[in-house]
Image (cartoon, rainbow, N blue to C red; front, top):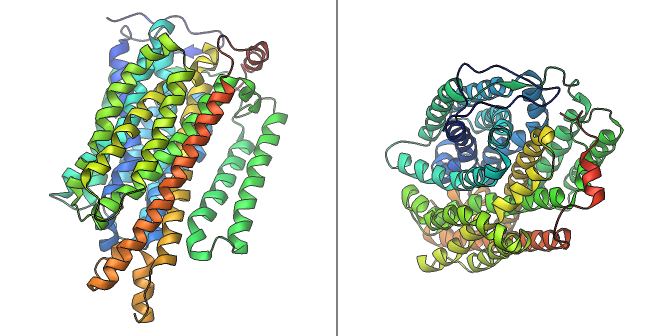
Length: 519
């Protein structure tokens, strides 16, 4: 039912709509835009074997092609959200969708892996403008009584879009090349752009303070140094001075970002917000569960195609049990939370994810599909159970005037977790594969090629190909056990932070009151 939007809070300007706002239509368009940028994080994973063969990209370049998007996405989320607040969220959504679509169109025209890395970064710029607008639009459109259900839809789309993107890409690859994956992005961006023009109202804060450029540069530089060093570690060695120095530099710069923000009158993100236990728990949970999730997608799509021998469509269909469990459980999650409180279902969801990763770590080249499904079902259920309370904790911990901050932190936690998960778990996989691959007797030139990626080694004579598959499985075991450890850590931290039930403590309420100047 159409509703007339409420007057904007003090200090916020909103364009007067020509027609009443329709919350259902706004939710649909917001989720369509969200689905487009989230699917792009995962959809290209199913095309990695095809892309690697055609572009001759090695394992490190393949990691960069996937992770360049997530890294730029995460690094720019906070300043992009501030730009939307200052100049208009609808306007930022339109520009972001245009950049996302244009970058995808250009990516479909190149075969150079380095060019693809750059263009995936361009897509990340567009996605960073798009995503902060989606959740903040939803939370400001729906009244508090209906917000949890709306957020559960957003969370279901956020989780399921990755799997839907894999399925769509697998279907396209049955008929066309990996370029069709980018052309799908163009189509989705165009439809979402038209929908935004038609139903999403404009809102902005023209009196907002200037964007914290120093903070934006520090967070981008810190994340870039950290992720670059992790992705390049398998080639250089984890003990190499460049690797250790780069990781140390990234951590120092990020610590400098925290110190900088604490001294700013109008910070990009006030670290004091994390004194709110629920806000901190939600942010940590989202980051760590998507660390594991997107790292898993990067690993498992190569396993299904290069080890099991599935084609792209079969590989994509093979992960559908995860979505089949995730979507209904994410819809059930608000009811469970209302009945039992957030802590129980939330921690249970994270434990299910850890259990799923433990099951999946037992896979090898001869494993039946039943074992794959036995891991995917609890993984989907755990993601669905944990996502909604985590997302709601972030948004509900802050007053309405700071919903844009909650949206930005939620998105940043998700994309940062994804970028780090792909980098760390992908590097564990790559390093183990290279160290376990026995190439005795293989000429040096061919050995370097086979060691660069399983896709290259899969075309080698049978003994070498079998050794390469076994080495890949060894790397996958360690990567998935690492994902299980990370989600167990998330479960422990959430249980600790939410050990007291009920309303936030007085220090938490105080932590969110004096920050109306935040972007």
